[in-house]
Amino acid sequence: MPSRDFSLHGAIDLGARQAATRKQQERRAQAQAGGGTASAGAGGAGGQYVLDVTDETFNVDVVERSQSVPVLVDFWADWCQPCKQLGPILEKLAEEAAGKWVLAKVDIDANQQLAAYMQQMGVQGIPFVAAVVGGQLLPFLNGAAPEPQVREAIDQLFDVLRKEGILPDAPEGEPGAEQPAQPPVDSPYAEAEDALQRGDLDAAKTAFERLLAQNPRDAQAKQGLGLVELSLRVQALDPERALQEGQAKPGDVQAQIGAADVEMMSGRVDEAFARLIAAVRASAGDDRDAARKHLLSLFDLIPPDDPRVGKARRSLQSALF
Image 1 (cartoon, helix red, strand yellow):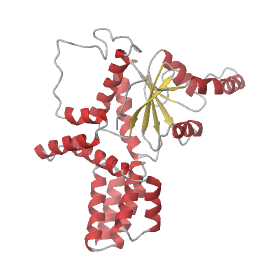
Image 2: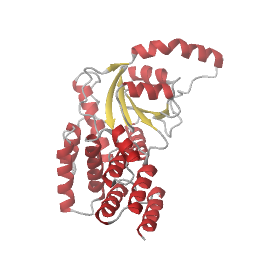
Image 3: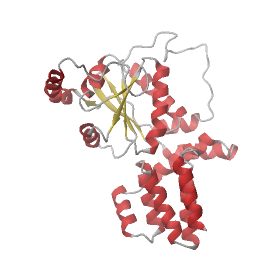
Image 4: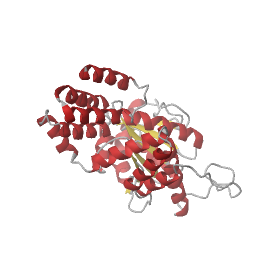
């Protein structure tokens, strides 16, 4: 979900981190003897404005680059299913921006220093996106969201950067420039998106529910509501305790539901599905129905053609019959 505050006041200064690792980078560069760095500009992540970043290249590819162009840093991992939903959206928007900003992707499993740094910032899960401008790091997005919400969040970020004088106003005709002659589109998701920008999950939930009441087949609203509800449930939990209770109380369906929510939020989709399927298999009556319905609600957060969903549906049928 979008971060509550896009102001750069109080943002983290990456200069200290840059200075601390400068000598290490220089030694490695000398050892490579002209082999170059990984930051050629195009990047290996899938496009001209999308690049993979490592512990070794972060200072050059992100901190130094941010002095001339904003960089959004996507912290992800291969096991994180929400990351696989958010990543392609960010890559698409980076290509559309055509250099207005650059997307840097960090695989936290392969880059333990950056993973530890992310944890030091108090980030508890991925996907997590930070904005880096002029060497200043600003927590930006937490968790996955549909494309319209991500697009709106990025637009708002750059509006704030321009208002604070950190970025110049976009010239007429370029991405981000105001077009007075073209009235804004009245999006049916505007109310929900505005609530998400404010960090008001309860208001976003109400807005998505209203959209679904008008059109129960609205897939975007259904996914948005599901993500908001999952975020609200996990917010009310102590994640570590929820996982411990899930381990200690295999016969407690509510404990299994709480642990599955934490796993789902952290991208451990297979574990969440397997936990609830086991709860269905081991329970009966109302408890069994609660576990089944909760599992079905988690299915809605994943594209229906994802193989994990098909596999879990088959396992659920086996558990039921």
